[in-house]
Length: 318
Image (cartoon, rainbow, N blue to C red; front, side, top):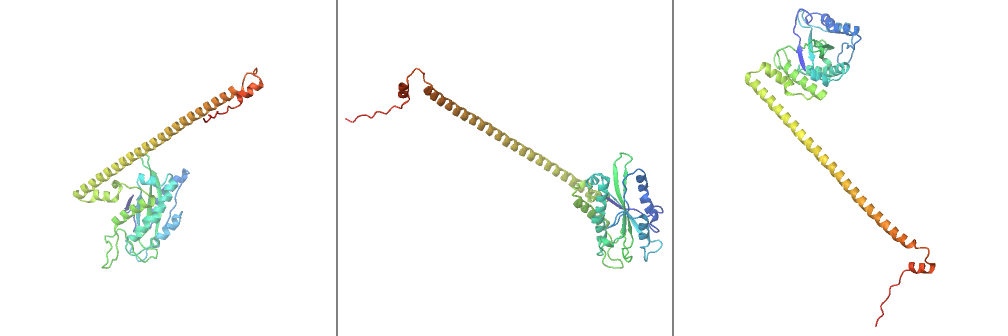
């Protein structure tokens, strides 16, 4: 997740005057999409969607109590997910837009408020967001990002809140609190991973990016070695899972083969038993028929004698 604070300029991001120029710029994409009949997203804040641009401008421009003419009246913040993060947020533009609004409301703004170290709840931050969709001219990949207009003052129009201050959680002096952008980026990243169950690799982390950009050679080498070790560990785990899966599959196959073999043997036994029973039955039937189907020329008396069981002779005792 790439988060950055737009630098002050005399053009679109001039924040010492009205927010009208920035609000107009953020709405320009909607006109193009509406002409093509494509889904559009209006301005949103912590609780509401589809807020009119005129409401945004009025609310930001009137929340400037005790600010000097040259003071910043608002800040512009860009929140841009990577292509992989975007896929984790949904399959359609509407799903991704809803996911982005949820992320801003549930993760980014709460972390932004907490980072001032003044005990501010998210509801104290006055902001309006606008989601943009566009495609890369080089590879036509879809890109979605969110622009935030955040008031310099809190909702009560009493507290000055600057995310660009160099103070970091100071407890003494005129300025209490401060703002640590590094902590914001790290916590906003962790919040994204938790919200969308995103498995972030080391190369994707802000910590790795920050080390490669700002730290000394020793830190960079250490981070690269950590990445290699992490990747090796992941590869080994994948292999282990693959071996285990193959073993499980082989065990299951062997089990199935044993069941099939046992079934075949049992069938063979049953067949043999049935054949034996059938043969015995046929033999008994043949014996019975051989007795009952006697020639017709034998007279009835002789026939009865043949059928009559013989008595066992008991030997005489001497």
